[in-house]
Image 1 (cartoon, one colour):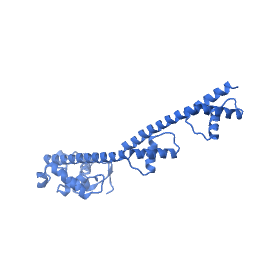
Image 2 (cartoon, rainbow, N blue to C red):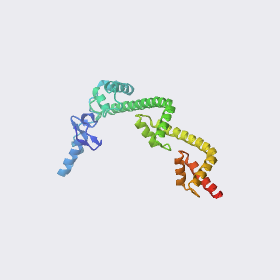
Image 3 (cartoon, rainbow, N blue to C red):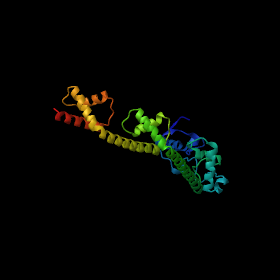
Image 4 (cartoon, helix red, strand yellow):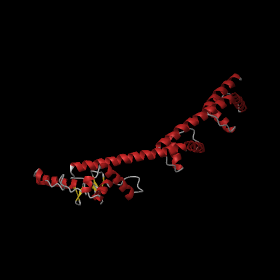
Length: 269
């Protein structure tokens, strides 16, 4: 079946669709009648429109009449587990397949009380499925949180290997893809937030250490400038000095080194 259905915005599902009856689409049948009447310029009296199924006239098995919505829900869930044990998602139209297995060929045309019972069962099943997903996600989230410290350590090592100077959420996602890690969005965000805090703390600690070493570093830079015949230094000169001496300092320290070196060069003219 490859015909496109504009109502579901998908290919026609045939007898898996609730609008399928007696090898025909109820919607298409009805629209064809209207189209024929428009072409012929005539009207179809309401009592002559050919509805494939009349409401309340569909045969309902005694089993469906007597079962409660709750018990029908239990049987539907059992049906899913037996027929689709490895499926994470319910196949399209599976509830109607279940009803057919119980002798209900279509939900269209059922008596109101039976329709209400079946709809209650479907909604109960959806609620049970949502609750099961929430429990599964909570268990998964708890497991991922137990591994969070290790994941953050691995991510920060990866950041250092990639020579990145800051933490970004897109880089967290890239790290997970490269390491074939499938984590919940909440865990991705936790890795990002806590890695960012760790890197900020690490940078603050490094700045404090560099600040203590700055006076000595300024004196060395002044000597280097004089040896190279410089009366003042540019930011490019500072970068050259650091590169020649294999020094890796924070941007904040670089700015201080630039300003203090120029000040000291002017004083010692």
